[in-house]
Image (cartoon, rainbow, N blue to C red; front, side, top):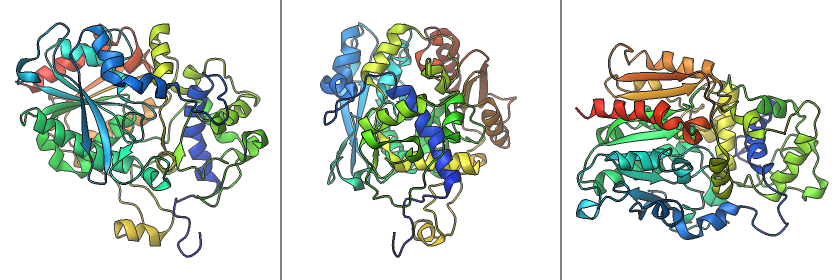
Length: 446
């Protein structure tokens, strides 16, 4: 790009390979589970599933009260939140949570709030918390089908997608926490995140500590922070695919019929990354033809060998997910794989970084700055290929500099047979993950 370098921060092949490590794996796991989309039509069945909203489609049919809310971020994104103020069959006092302790649930990458409602009421965290007396709030990040509105932009504008998880942390999470705090009568809340939802919390807790005054604790399921040891077999295979260098963010992708794996990042010019779109579907088809890549069980190849999923939750997943995200967000995650650090988005040259940050390199997020008296619950799995055990161990060592494992402020749970999706979709997550999580909550409420 003349005069300013590559403003998307694209780097040589090493970064593109790292980018493919994430996005091809995500796309493969999601898109290959679907039939080929019809050109010129929306391929996302989540658009259809979302037509009636989460409350009507996933909460009210099970007998729960549910409210649809919106909150606007300081940069104009209008986010959808769902509130479950009472348990099944319970009358909500005062038209809301009635003085109950609020819990904010935050989904992960290319997911939305349905993450917490994919199983039966006895198995999904959103319902379980409501039935155990909590005022449940479910977040939906910008770009998902529930949060695609903006005060001045439309989602077809490239400017709409000019964000990464930096903004999910500093803008979305900040607005949601403040809104829930206000709506709940200035009661401090618990926070629960899965996958990317843990990363944005760790970033906020280390970088925007004013949020801590509105939080009681944070539960981090399949925590994502350091990514350089990510062990997904499909991701590693994707990284080995020869990638053509893409030098311009305005590059127009070729039609799917001309796609080859040599141009695996042909779609990078799209500011919106839609994992169910025709371009990605064609790309996944090519990737799955490569020798040594097993696309038979893509969920396991991507997330690790999940122990405890059943068909009903997978069907709910396919009806609602995956969701779109910003290509810039994917690049940011790729930078973490390459660099092995947790830092703000790298614009690719010293001049652009100085323009945004006042320094030549992106500032790092220092998780050791999270106050040692802020309660954290971390749960991770031995079979998780995305939240790899080595990466989580590194995170725990960093947190250990401020949090003592001997006290009640850092609780760590390791489940040897769990993989990434088990934490939100497993039929036995209620007793294995959510019961210990709620026990941790109760300890912090004393």
